[in-house]
Image (cartoon, rainbow, N blue to C red; front, side):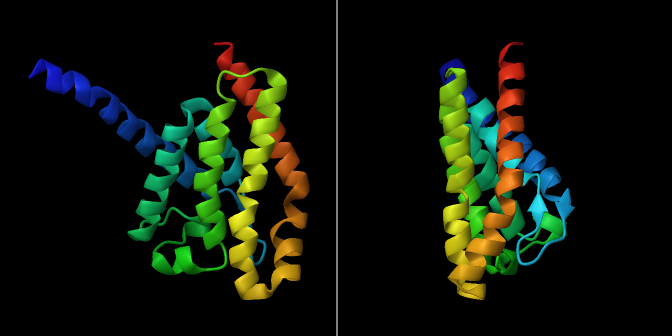
Length: 173
């Protein structure tokens, strides 16, 4: 019995971290600037930190839990959106991109400053690929690139720098 409990602990820990991370991501989704077709939120900052602090598996698990909660109808997406329609809407590609970004950001953990900065920026940019591709189906590629990426460059740089600073500060503790 003790052996079974011991081997279950890592899985239980990952599940707990994923659930907590999904709630953090849901809260960050509610801090939103109402833009169309993609709102500006704090989600990408949360995604970077979930991966960078928890590692690739925990970051990915947190985003997967968040997506599952939203798919089941919990109002966790930006502006309280929920359900399969929200996943299939214009921002659906970004939601999938969060999973990729959290996984990649996990590789910043335990690295030096320059490598962390490069990994976090790459992870942040990675989330835009499925986002723009999906959004293009709604508004065309040129508009998707403009409204779904170019407008977000300043925020991307600020949030990536903030994620790096928070990661460095928390790592010192």
